Each structure stands twice: as structure tokens, then as C-alpha cells.
Length: 171
Image (cartoon, rainbow, N blue to C red; front, side, top):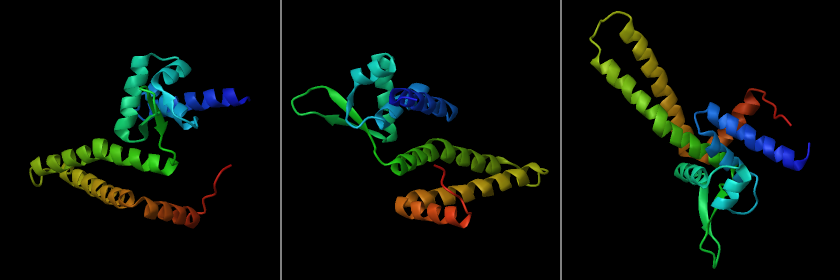
């Protein structure tokens, strides 16, 4: 496989993975391109390389900036905007995990809490199931908060768990 073929395959795979995780495939493909690029890229360069419209590229860049995983850079004497990705894969993971927790998990936990509060006491087995779900989600929330509070400690803890569980790195 040539380098160009490998790059294209990576971009397409990153886009497919993003779509499976509920992220627009174009957004994920733009991020993949930035991951594979040493220097900053302009909106036009991104659109041209990925064969997408400038509007699609612009919306994708806006979404990636919202997540905090890319940033805008300026070139001296050039009015055009350029973009680079966060270079640290672990930092990208933490930024996305924090965002997804805030946007997806926290509202779900709130709905479970509201549902349990609104249920009549002693109404069969359902309140017990919802209390178990609440307990599970509160435990996951506590773990998530603890893990996301300090990236360095979390990296260390994950490395220790990996060794404890006998996980071996592939590759």
C-alpha cells in the first residue's frame, strides 16, 4: 500500500468510525486529514483534498472547534484562516469524553432522576429497576468525573489497569 492509499484509507475509516459514534462523517474526515497533516490547512485546501463543498468543510471545522480539538491559526501577512488539530491523542480523547458526557450522559442522568422522583412509591417492580439504573448511572458519573478531572492521573490509572489486567499493546 502506498502512503497516499494509506492516508486515504485512514481518512475514510476515521469518517466511518465517526458516523458509528454519532458524529457526522465529514466532520470526522476533516479531523482525520488534520491529524495526518504536519502544518496548518486552509478551508479551501481541506475542501479540495476531501472533495467536499466549502460550506461542508466550514461547518465541519466549526463543529471540531466547538469540541476544542482543532484551533484556528493565522499566518503573518495572510488574511486566510488556517486550522491545526490538537496534537496529543490522549488530550483529544479527554476533550471528546468531557463534551459527550456533558451533552449526552448528564441529561440522561437528569431524566432518570426526574423519572424516579415522579414515580409513586411502591408501584411494583418498575421503581426498583429505575433505582438500579440510577445507581449504575450515578456510579458511572462519579467514575467519569474522577477520570476526567485530572488527565495525567487518569492516564496513569489506565496504564496501571492495563498492566493489572494483563493487556498487551498491539503493534
